[in-house]
Length: 156
Picture (cartoon, rainbow, N blue to C red):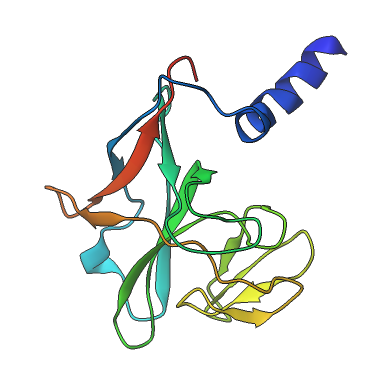
């Protein structure tokens, strides 16, 4: 029982007690499940921080539960209907639950409280009142990679 409680609470401690002193902003190369060049208009692909990595992606835009500098451990690269590429943190701006891409409706949905977001990250339906958080990114050396700004957290 104790192990289960520790396993459930450990990831939350990064939010409650951020590491002091030893953090350093850096670049994190992540592999996409689908290359940006293969994304059709209205499509998205999810990515995660590499397993065993000490890096955490950092939101640079958003509000409510997704403030500047908040960590994110996953994200979405999306091409909107006009072909504009964006990269968002996976965290819902309402209470931080992980959003999912709804391919049929061409939007992002939060399973926790029902918030919905347009492909540009703006709120379609609340309770969220702030847009999804964007991530600083650039194309990687490989078509299936992007480079996301992050923070190294020793021991994570």
